[in-house]
Image (cartoon, rainbow over all chains, first blue to last red; front, side):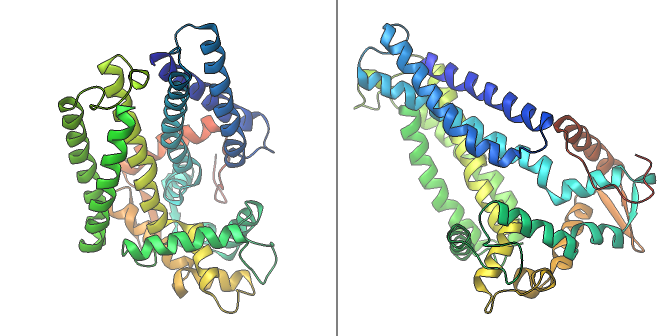
Length: 173
Length: 185
């Protein structure tokens, strides 16, 4: 079983290296879509590696149930590290608060007018860019008005609307 | 497998406790509740792990790791991932998610927004994007990362330290930034 945990950790390290390095080399590849494409491949690779080792009769428990448990443990280890990694990365790359701090740091005397910040982070151009990103992700039907949700966008919006009501979070945003 | 079963049980209990806490407590105490529930539940999970047998009285030999330390580490990892990567992220998205709020606005809008201006002005049930960004600035000000005086926003010493870390991380990731006019960088 320790082999299963180690496999999960090593595959996650490999995933993180690929996920961090490739978009740096090619700007056409977004990290979000890359993660969606890469994760199933890595999960499949983990299962294949453990099955291959199981076939040799070493390290992995001999019974089929033991092999299945090892695959489950390795994949859960990988997914656990994945769900901790992605939000941390997303904070660095997408958080408005982080972007504000970095923009201030890169400005002369670490100071900017509020109007300039508003123009960058609360303008119609900003909204248009977000809408375009959501069209690309398949949440909104098209990039020109009137803006309508795709089925995927409706499912996500309804699910979180329900969660906001259950947790009494107010409108959010 | 013991790790997974314990984590699922504690995850279910924690979800119920958090739901009650969010419904009862004012929103300014939600972050404190998230931290407190995590700390207490992790202690409870650790105690439950140490007090229960490795096979929980019914698990077959194939489901045992054979190492109490490994099983304990996996228990912590699974629970931390489920809590911080699951529950806390759901909370963050539901309470602050910007794109998500745009989707909810579109779901509730009748007729659907006919221009980018309508989307920006109608953001968060008509509060507008400016309201959203004011809220972000207030949050940064409250944390002591920035000061806002006379229409100028300035980094504090503490904020500059945080900004330096994020700036370096963004450089490492090869992320460009929207530099203001006149910037020397």
